[in-house]
Image (tube, rainbow, N blue to C red; front, side, top):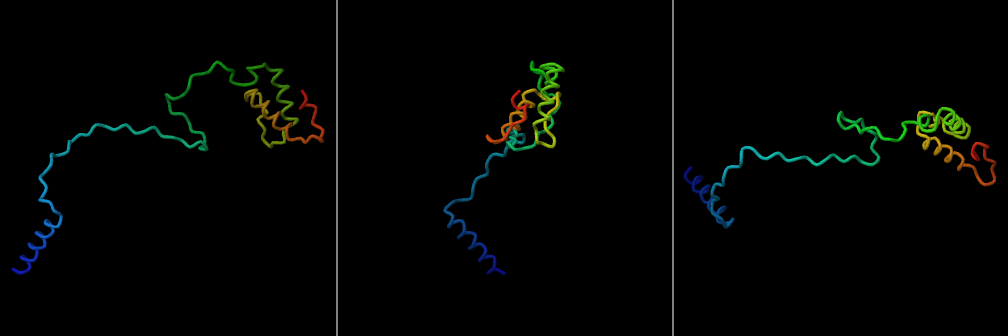
Length: 127
């Protein structure tokens, strides 16, 4: 047994000598309470699906009309919707007076642009 203790003491001494350092002195104890670190804001990828707004994050109503019917009136929005339905090949086109007029007109423009130069466009594309 004395040889084992002697061997362990020798190994410990050689280990300290090999490191080239003396036993470290104790350092100050770390602070018990660290200052809170603010987390960086979460970044959503550009292709992420829409998320619901948390309470308090809802934007105030803008000065622009909420839909085409409010923007240009009942009769004019009905004509725009009818044109959209007539030309759109989409199964669920955005041809609804409750959508923005810009969206409805965009669907008309997109649909009419699909016709080739030699093809006859519907009359609704010319309006």
